[in-house]
Image 1 (cartoon, helix red, strand yellow):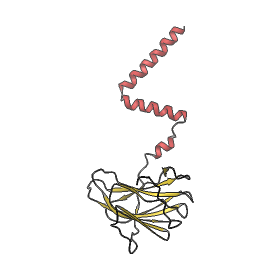
Image 2: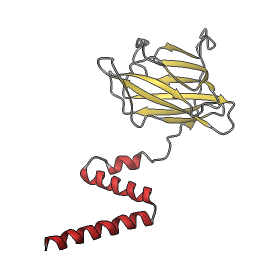
Image 3: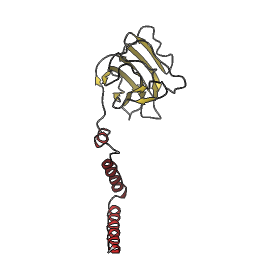
Image 4: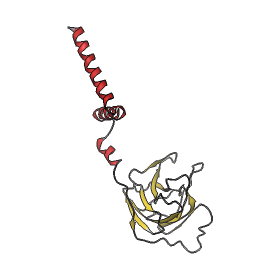
Length: 203
């Protein structure tokens, strides 16, 4: 009786293996693993769907006018704060971030523009990163990535859900290893004009 059960289980396993290999083995195996992990609670089904959501695009509008006396050619990325607004000028970059700042509330409005020599990649990304209380690590603010077209026109978007009192930085990136972007940002909603640089942290 016991031997019969073992043989039956072996036959089922063999049939399952054959059915998996008959269709797309990689896809079948991935589906089995994802289903098992979801059932065990290791993966949140809703979160995985959100990861595949449409890109968040900035809306046309706004303007970026740098303050008088701000030298936009000083370096690849130059920042200047006036009142509750941080102005950012970037020249020929792929990835670069600002120093840390504290928002006045739970949101920031970011207006930006850029141009590029690339004819295939039409947008750049702006995202927020949050500094830990002990200033030893930084983490990406989930859902904060906004896409801005690289057609030289101003676009704007308000990022919400920030934690008052926390320190954040703006990270600018562009998915290309052969081309660069040049442009500017206006980040409105800062709580003070003070910026914090973390020693040894890469830009």
